[in-house]
Image 1 (cartoon, helix red, strand yellow):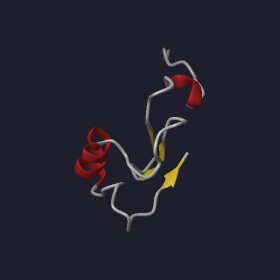
Image 2 (cartoon, helix red, strand yellow):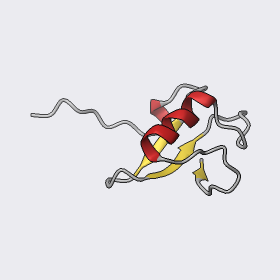
Image 3 (cartoon, helix red, strand yellow):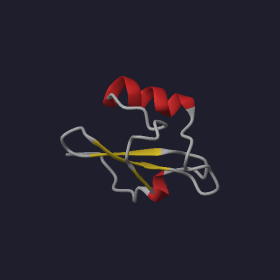
Image 4 (cartoon, helix red, strand yellow):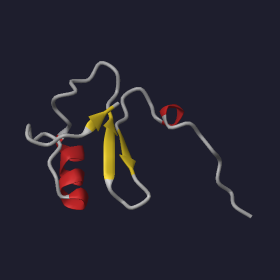
Amino acid sequence: MSNRVKVEFENALANDDYGLIISKDGIIKGIWIPDGEDQDVIPESIANLCIKYFHFDPNDKDVSISVH
C-alpha cells in the first residue's frame, strides 16, 4: 500500500518557492515562479540545478521555457 498523498502543485509550494515542472521522461517543461518575483531572472541556485541536471541555463535569453 502506498503512503502517497495527492496535493495540488500550487498548494505544495510556499509563497516564495520555485517549482520545476518535469515530464515523465525527465525533460523539464517549465518553471513555477512565485508571484511578485522577476520572471526574467531565475535565482542562481535554481539556474545551477537546471544547468547541472537539465543542461540548460534558464537565464540565457536564447532559451525558451514556460514560466507559470
